[in-house]
Length: 392
Image: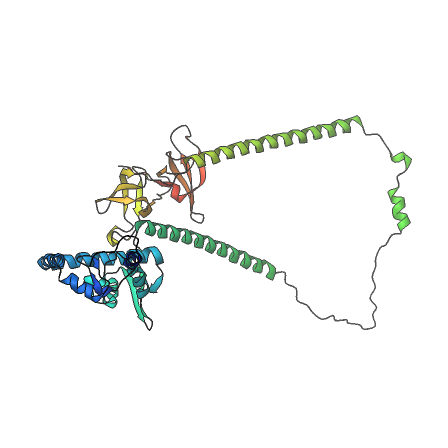
């Protein structure tokens, strides 16, 4: 029987049927052919092309099974990651969404016979968190993307800083409350009952009241009381007035100068503040556990920069070189009196001497000892903006 002509109702009906999903048991994965009924599947099984594909499969069956299994697992995990993220969802729901794609890899071509075996495999390999309930198996995707891990670490660091600020504020408020209680306790007044030794004694109030007329007379001034001020008094008052005006002008000039200096500092800060701070010849500390426990919190020196956000670090104790990302490192604060390098902010690139540390506010005071700004003291610079300078 020949094919129906293009445009006929039967041709259109066959095309519509071919677009939709068919039964999985009538699909041949090796030939990637979908049959619409049992008779068509039997005819395909006896065809010459299918027999050739079976011979290829028989030569290396494990290779084809592993390839199909890998493609199926990758497609399932990709759909789980994109559509559901790290949410806990039923495994069968993800599977139904996956098989809705017509070109998907069928499970009967993989090494897993059922969806339960596949879900257990995901749990054993650590790709998902799986758990079984009365409603079936549930899966939760484990995101190990470096960008996501870096974002989580940054959020955790910010949350820790906010929590530390809140703890410091609560401690300060508790100290103020205790201090207020201590001061108020010495002046506490206890209410007592009124006790009169003599009941017949009268209470007298002695209030010195003046009449309204006397007050008005006191406000009136006699004609002889009006006198012209002396010239000496006039000049002294004018001198004091001019002195106060001069002081106000100096204060106004000083405040204007402070505003100009502040604007200049803000301009420098905005111009030199960058997301990357890695610089050669500074001491840094490894703050990631993904490399192993022996590398965690190890100190080293930056010997070379690969790009803006990665560098080669030589660890002091282990004497090894590692290529590390900026997100996995943090600056090192030396002892007072040692040299540091300003790695970010308005004074980026200047060497300075550490003068003072403020552990409550996580900042330090440094004094620049090189360049045109030699001798300038910078108060309240954050720990993240300075790092210990390596000396051979």
